[in-house]
Amino acid sequence: MGLLDDRVAVITGAGRGIGRACALTFVREGAKVVINDLDEEPLAEAKAACEALRPGSAATHKGSVADRSTTDELMKFAVQQFGKLDVLVNNAGVTRDRMSHLMSDEQWDLVIAVNLTGTFNCIRSAAPYLRDVAKAELERDGQPRYHRKIVNFFSTAAIRGNPGQINYTAAKMGNVGITRTVAQEWARFWVNVNAVAPGFTNTRLTAAKGKGDELGIPEEQRQSMLTRIPMARFGEPEDIANAVLFFASPLSDYVTGQTINVSGGLQIP
Ligand SMILES: NC(=O)c1ccc[n+]([C@@H]2O[C@H](COP(=O)([O-])OP(=O)(O)OC[C@H]3O[C@@H](n4cnc5c(N)ncnc54)[C@H](O)[C@@H]3O)[C@@H](O)[C@H]2O)c1
Image 1: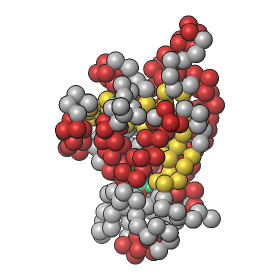
Image 2 (image 1 turned 90 degrees about the vertical axis):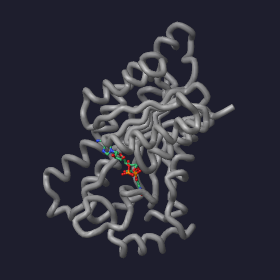
Image 3 (image 1 turned 60 degrees about the vertical axis):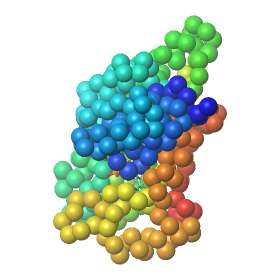
């Protein structure tokens, strides 16, 4: 028996990093997963890793969450592949760091489009399968058959504020607003909406940044961050996936509109 037996999940940006760890954790717990990402190779690798755990457990979908027609297709694809949709994990994210006064329109627009509008796009595209199906059950049977789940992502850097990330922190805190709003709108349909804030987690977003790299963090900043983590280590993608699993599973059926930091005890002023 797994915590997600017979559940179908869409996980965005799941070719790499935290999203891939979520896909593997979900499959281990019995789910079928649709792995969305922009990039072909990580998609194929993530699918192969899931299928190695359980054949038939994974399908891939290539496309950007920033594009509305793509997110419509993504949710439809999940239902065509696996018959329904139960869990949506809005994990896709990207950074383009620059001090506020120097940030370009392109850097602002991309980060807002992926991290914030992407969450909205996916929720609205999933509404027919998460909300409307539950509403029909409520009207027919007096209550939805079970709780369906949305897990959004924000960030401890956004709670704290982070020099060089005006675009990212704005987008991520926007996801807290989305979480609290949709949680209230869809509570009576038993669609739980919660959000996870990873602390400093080992992925390419936090790898030591080389000269000219678009992603990553300067090594000096990484080391100074480490000194502020009481558990004295960076997080691993699996640490975050375990919190996402809680919000995706029946263990959290009476929890909605909530946020959790998964950050090794990092104190946020
Ligand atoms: N790593 C951290 O320390 C940290 C901290 C706080 C929050 N987060 C958040 O966790 C989530 C996962 O980040 P990660 O560290 O695993 O990053 P990652 O870069 O390892 O993985 C993110 C994935 O999202 C995909 N992606 C990017 N833009 C996309 C788009 N438009 N549509 C679909 N997929 C897209 C990328 O191709 C990549 O595979 C993000 O929302 C990120 O902001 C990470």
